[in-house]
Image 1 (cartoon, rainbow, N blue to C red):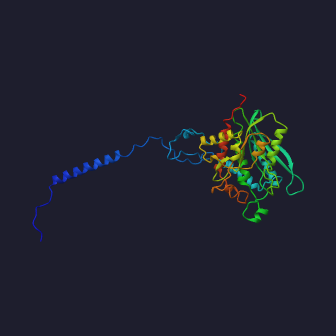
Image 2: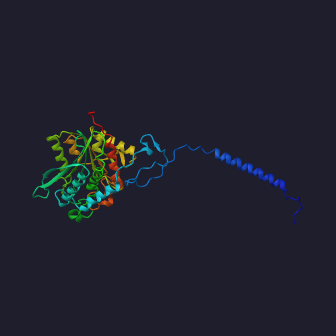
Image 3: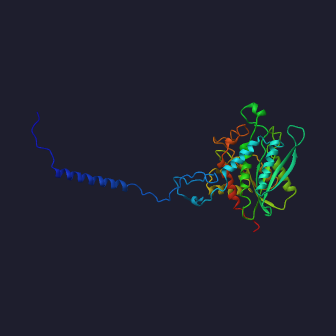
Length: 376
């Protein structure tokens, strides 16, 4: 049995007093905990990621952990919108690829040549064909080739050369299937059509380009009329162009040259090409273009050198003395240099992206707008 004790029940007034004390303790703890949290820094609200614009291009959004105002790249809210139509540029790429293989001297090349000539003329460009011949690597008759030259604002004496090759390699000689390497079909969506598609889209903006610096487009033939490496020469069209520029100097002068090659990759990464950034005369050009990309927030342009590429910019600079840089995405999503689909049957439009084409064209266009005549 239990021993007798005192009645332990509490009166109502003591219950109320206890509850009040507990409430005061809880309030004090809450206030103390809030005071221990550092005050958040006042920042402008960050914009949510924007979807496709009317042109089909995606505008970059401000990083979530950063202020909207980036002192090195300008105010995101005041950056210009991309005026290029990404989906239209991609349709150009698809239309070119639908022609099929386009090696120099082939029916496919002839069909493409007629299509781009009509396109540029309809948009107001002055088009001419720079025709020449080259040895057929397979023997027999020489191959007929032609560079397509498009002049915008031909009255302007100081000019910029924007160029790309528009021929495709005769065979997919790096394909993993040995049979395809000997007789397969090479479409050349990124390696061939992408640079052409960007220039076709830029053509919509050229007639209203302000300033006193003119622009020429050059589509080079015979960049890779090559069946056997080490035996067959590369860069036939750009070499011919550069030699003619020296032998028969035009009235105008090319201040800069910008080569576009393999600029449509779905996971585009455009590093600075080592020749372009190491040459003293082209280094300022590289800095200007990559600085333009940074200002626009186009992160696909990565401001460091990663690969050295033999390309059409070599004869333009070394023979023609035109300071030319190579804007080339020579790496794939897996970091492989060159891309795994390069010179294979897998280089199809599936490897390319409308956004990539539009972003490269945008950087080039905004850079063009900064060019001023040195004669002023």
